[in-house]
Image 1 (cartoon, rainbow, N blue to C red):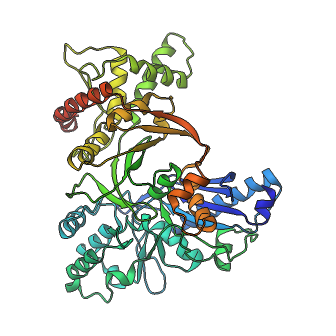
Image 2 (cartoon, rainbow, N blue to C red; image 1 turned 60 degrees about the vertical axis):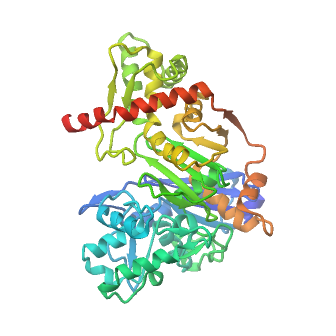
Image 3 (cartoon, helix red, strand yellow; image 1 turned 180 degrees about the vertical axis):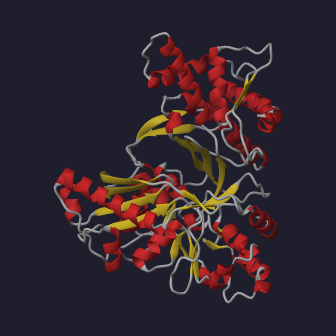
Length: 527
């Protein structure tokens, strides 16, 4: 490892998550060398969720400093060079700059839901679903609002694109990240030219000096070179001054793309489900969807293949609340039970329940859920007087409903659009108890679900792998083949095949779940 660090046979990935910035350094065999991190939080200022530029740069510098110290502590080596670097961040949002490269308005993050009018109008204009968090929705809403700064825009980009630009001078984005700015044509791997023309026509009467292609980044695919770290960029990243410029960078990517890489789910008919506080599924499509669905986001892999994404706001929060209640119950009897054991035992207890949950019903909506049409949520548990009210069924339904909204969106893909899935990779805290939620997800999706025993560090690790791919791939080697041969070969894990009885049981539950949404609606209106 020491030799690899000294001679720059390494790849560095840094990802800006919503609460943590993380750095991961790997060697040329993609083995983990070191990590660094920095915690941060967005702020709600003047009606906008934002991070300041000081937050961004201070966080990046601290994160890199932590990584450098971690490597020095472990190997006694100061990092002076790296083989390749890649940056990723939470997707979408809006960063607009003038001709002097000045930020015109505070960074508007993906979390803002202030673009409903623009998202609806663009969806109708394009015949393509434009979610509120997408960059183009933010730009168009600013135009609809008559915001004065729009006329002065010379460049607008995402957080990942901004970091890359400042460190390299290159105004580029990886195609996966770009797909959260504006729709991508997967046949060209570029912004959809017809939709660009429609947008320009829609705003032509405003008299702006720019057209859309003048102010958006250039789109690159995984494996392409995206510039080099300038000497100024090196000083901006490493305030100690030890890091030298001249290091090649790969295209900046979004957290969706790095998640696909980190779970080896970039191939057609594969996908991944991330389940924690929120839950989302990403399925790589083999053909375009027939219809526009507001519940389904269409983005791409880092190589530009179309991906259908179902994103839900609620997953594990209600489970955690019930586990806290059971912990409190145990404490009342003087039973000093570890909370982790409570999760383990009760998750496994759920496997004894009826396949359909015994007629019980629950909604885990701590917040709104756009897939099912809710702007607000209320956690609800309901049952009929003749339901089979057992602990096993209670736990089964509590776990089922964690995937309820997701299943509603997935059924659009699986049943209405006839999307085919060969394999799914599950990751996140919900899969900690081996086999339980993995088996439930296999039933919900009627597809094999794998959970890997991997030492990966999530999205930052996925970004480091993309940087490594650019630097180390063979001529003509695809990202899919590189991952199979160089990253996931020999990786162990477990696979759950869908059991037909479980599939039917979950389908029966979801029918009741769909009928019972009126109960959730009444709770929102009454509580």
